[in-house]
Length: 96
Image (cartoon, rainbow, N blue to C red; front, side, top):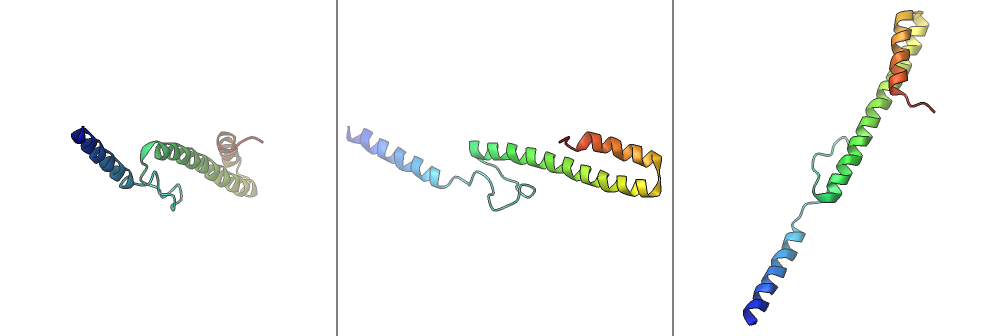
């Protein structure tokens, strides 16, 4: 019985030590664009949120760039570029 108790105690001590040495789920001090490491279930959930954020940001950036380029094309009266930028806006900008 003493051997089992000693073994169980050592196992619990070892397991509690493992928990302390686990890395953080993700790099909370960094922006989503800069995060490189994700660990465990919480890290995986954050990685998915970061991916969604980054895809959304890419679309917003493309949308904003297309709006600026559209304004320039209108100023230049460039019909071909106006059509091209309008198409990009339809594909990337969220309709409100």
